[in-house]
Length: 388
Image (cartoon, rainbow, N blue to C red):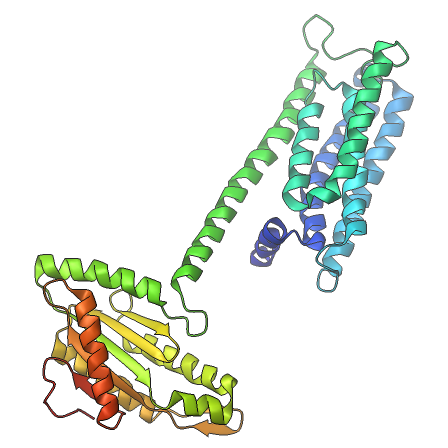
């Protein structure tokens, strides 16, 4: 469940899906509302604390906070239940989640005093959460309405029509020492504004790091086969070739190409061709040493292996096993059995010249094609017999 929730949060952050945005936004705002409701409930049941408030207004605000928390919880529950079929962008659901909370917190900030209490910080925090999960066009109307409410209250306060912090019997900061109640209230609400915001920032940065890692993996990986792509192969070839030149350790390149692949596509369709390539990708991945060797799809039906610490004899052995394994491996496409073979060319990297080894391996590959396919040819011994 936790993994599913994390995926949902990541989807809400990256894709701005309204359903998950409603759920995540409510999960962040409802606990703060419940905390405020708990503090107000304590004040309503303790006469010595109630003296700091206007009791009839506090009772009305308590009802409002409770209804707002209930509304947010209901929106989150319904959005979660409908997450599979709600459209990616559902403006009405966004308005249902955003409108009451943003306007409600604007009102609460004004009731408690915007300038000298954490309510202003909480309002900013909730605005940041809203922007993180929802599209800007969903938030803009409520930002405008909140700005009108805040500016209007300031104007009316300046004209003497309304008082500052109308929920309180007197402002928290009246020039003297804070009472015990307001000291604890400020500590609790300050932590309620800072700690969730800090946790959200940490999660956001970790989510961005995961997303970056996924993008880097995609940039290096062939989507169909799961192998490295040409770009990654050429980068690793250059790196390993430099290492080979410094240490004079064996390094071998193997080029592979599916035999008569065009006929597979023409006869059975491109879906069958994709099935062949993905099956070959799994075979190659299982035939090399993990974290040491590199199997790559260079493009089309052309593949390559990079084998550090492997001499030509060992590379021929690896290539021969792949040729034989593919020859005997049933590849099914629907009810059809696709007989597929592969040819391979092997060449060592010498003097740190990886590109030359790649060209030699490619030449050997085409020599294998000329000799009848379904075989391995070694570049160092072009006149030697092909190995089956």
